[in-house]
Image (tube, rainbow, N blue to C red; front, side, top):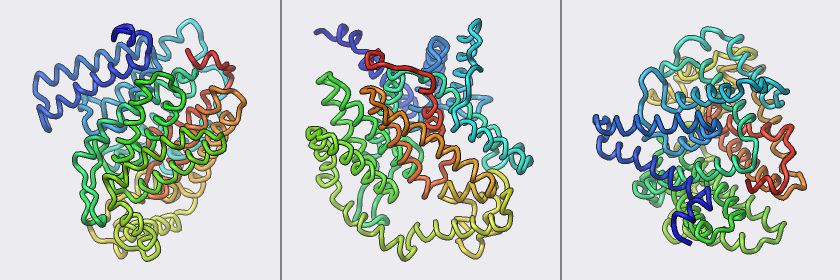
Length: 458
């Protein structure tokens, strides 16, 4: 089979080539211009953006795919005038494209909202009602927090509407995994695993931070593993195994304690899942991918061994998190029902944590999304937020237990990613993470759909 025939017979290979070409354009701009964009690179980036906008206007679900796959490479995305980011611009185009495609059909606003989105809507409304000034006035980094959470809710709503076939779900998985690969490769190039965290050189790849990068790399591992189990093409099979090894090593060199624990959790849950199904080949591949850690980063065992003592005694950055959590509890006790206002943790921390933290940490977040939501929106806001997560998790779990051979493993994979993000939220303020809200929408994307196994191959 020649190359052109292979590309056209396999849409995923075509997606691979297109996405890598676009990503190369962004990387070229970053390398050539370092921190500023030359006139040539600006024109190149503009051309790429125009192509993406046209693609989204033709097929709206591509907007969600691009937004999600931008997360592992967020650091290299170009700035856009009059917009908070290029991602927000493409999100707006996606929303407009969805309504344009609905002209004459009048189905865009029909149907009931999934429970997760209902609770999410109440949470966003509570953000405004509980403290209008904090919600509407520019806060940390001049961010208008109500606008941020309205955009996140719209992202989840669009996901529930647009990602309505297994093929679109797998497209999202491919794109996110492909975006994570260069980010992990860059992290591997930069990072060094020493005998302790202090002796290590941590790297966040192209994601902008080590902790966030570790979560994205572990997520891409889970997605690649699903794609490996459902892909028949031998070339893609081999490529996915190599890709899994790259993102595993990338997660390791972030030297993120939570990231390492999430990696172990993901490996464990995947192993249990396939042991129950007696899929021994999948277990062998997982073990082979994991062996990368011991071959190239054997010091990671020393760092893993230091996690429990650090948690027990509150040393290193664990102690800083304990102090941040203590300050967060003080904020909540001072305002138990309404909280201090959305996004106000950063501004109020000097008043509640000056005796707990060094001055350089007095404008940090809570590093715990549940505690930060509690401190900023009070007990009522936390109830809405937890209800949203529980309802979305139940929706994902319900569809993952169907007897359908296509839907069940697909939603099991998303359920696992959702669990990893919820666990990761214990040490990171991820309440405004786009991937989390996208999964909240995915929990309702199957409502009212009757997919068959044959539809899964479309």
